[in-house]
Amino acid sequence: MNIAMKVCYDGTHFCGWQIQENGRTVQGELERAISERFGVFSRVTGSGRTDAGVHAEAQVCNFALADGIKIGPERVADALNTALPADVRVLESVLAADDFDACRSAKRKTYRYSVYFSKREIPLFERYAVRFGGEPDLALMRKCADLLEGEHDFAAFSSTGSSVRTTVRTVYSVEFAPFVRGSDERRFSLDIIVCGNGFLYNMVRIMAGVLLDFGCGKLTEDAVKAALAGGSRDLLGKTMPAKGLTLVRAEYEADPFGSLIEE
View (cartoon, helix red, strand yellow):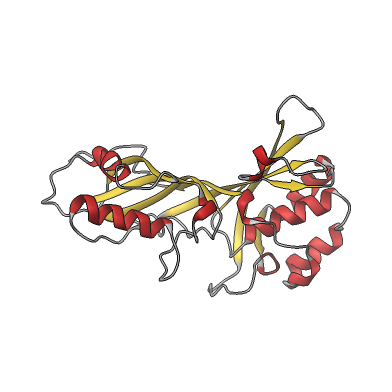
């Protein structure tokens, strides 16, 4: 059986998604839970590899469960959750088509980057958002977002260490969701929501920094255009911290969670 799952995790104490020898990872915890509950090893494939400290609202993944194991696909989630630590949970499990691959089958991915605006750190916000001292102009940020939407070579929006064959990606949309946190209207947050067909290493975190700097007048339209045209990382600002980033969802043409497959 090919089991597809939606997994939610707090990335604070993880070294990222991908399993590694000397670090705690989400993939490693899931594979350990599968071995513990079903007595077999099975490799778990994720829709993407989140970095250390990055969170996920609904990371899609899949793994092969031996046909001899008698459990309904929808009950796999509960079985694994009894063996998983508190900072990772399987929200849903279903039977997927044999050729479904959470990574290769993904058509779109959506990330959210969260910031809050305050002169001082607020402990209640710090775990999942990044404090930003300035007050950017949302109209300017929208102007910058228009420059980033569409198909571009995003080489300038990638950190070193990536071995991808091409740095061309399509950003379908960049949206902003400002809202007030708590009773003080001077303290508000902003979610930057980015949807694309794929993302380079640290691309969304760099985009978030560019949008915020543009909104504060620290980056010009010419600089952003030059970065897109020439691929120079030096033209842009810093990479924003990992804790503000959350993988929201992955989308598929044949979504295993949209139309359940009969056994």
